[in-house]
Amino acid sequence: METDIPLSQVMVREVVKGDEELNLMDAAKLMREHDVDSIVVLSNGEPVGIVTEGDIISELVSKDIKPSTLKLKDIMTTPIITASSNDRLFGIAKKMAAKRIRKIPVIDNGELVGIVADRDIMSVSSEMNSILEELLEINVEREPLGIEDEGERMGQGICEKCGSFSYYLEMEIEGGLMVCESCKEEMEMEAE
Image 1: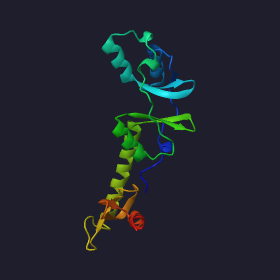
Image 2 (image 1 turned 30 degrees about the horizontal axis):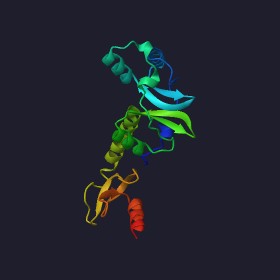
Image 3 (image 1 turned 120 degrees about the horizontal axis):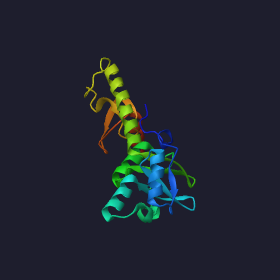
Image 4 (image 1 turned 135 degrees about the vertical axis):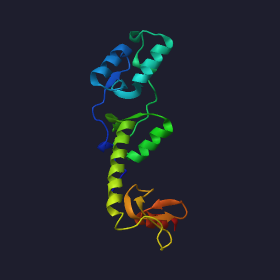
């Protein structure tokens, strides 16, 4: 079972967007109308930034500014960090954590095609954890978990290289990763 899926399978395709000249009052109304907490900022139809509800509140309250006097371009986060619909969920989750961002617009061939939020990732992750938990419970009677007599074999779980569930994880010596048989063979061939 593959746990590292492409963003195209989890991204939200309906993205709320607004021109960089849109004032914050109208942007907030647009966000409320679509029940979202962010807006992708466009300049000449191209995504150039992102503004969240938190950005608006922080900017307006901290400076006691009237919302109609500022535009999206004044407070947007730029340059925009993006992903492709073919990017893998695991890699994007790591990128979002490293950059400390909660949303990432998805762009293919220069066109905005979706957006992925941390909650989208968490919903997939919790769903996968539930499925894996059920699989482990089903198989616990067939094959005991833990170290077996064969030395490096460690039991079942998620391969740390490909993200697939495997009944036969092994410790890959050089990298110290728990990997499935296929990944272990692949890593051994790469090392030669």
